[in-house]
Length: 109
Length: 112
Image 1 (cartoon, chains in turn yellow, blue):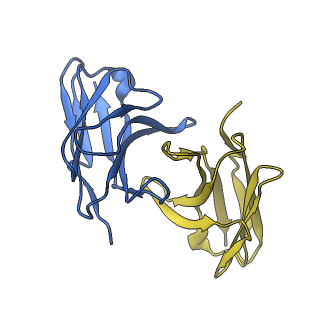
Image 2 (image 1 turned 120 degrees about the vertical axis):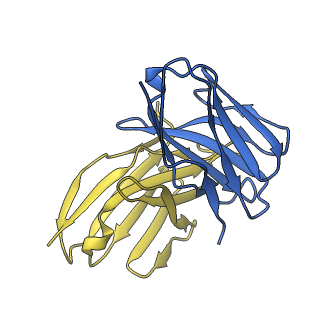
């Protein structure tokens, strides 16, 4: 079983739409979670951490469900500039971060 | 802001050459990492280091080695480059085990 699984997409949505990505992880002892954004031919950049109580940063909302071992990212009022690949990332113990393969989002005018 | 600098953006090397990829970070981070990224395979960890002179194998260390003589510098070495090592190589650093990573802008290596 893969450690971190994401739907690869692509998700093609119109501007202004709300879109949600889910990610599942296999290690129940995982303790930290992140969403990274990667633009085409660029490096990944930290978008936001994911906290147990859920957290929001502007149009972005991240949720964690430990019982079901999944993380979600919700983007409201999508902009063209949101087009990118979104990587789900999990930390377990003192080991390096484990990255999902990413979900590609295209926001269309 | 933390800056992670990779010495080359693009490299073309011949099969059998020894290749050095350099990575330097300027924020006194303890941890440094080397990944490669290929279409459909995502980011795969090659080697990492949690301290100077320390190194640990990641998921795909075969054909690679690393050097961390100074805290700020983590070098990836391809002992004898092969065409299946053509890839995007990404270096990252983090302050400690629980913090997110900052990536360099990557080196796109082509082995011919």
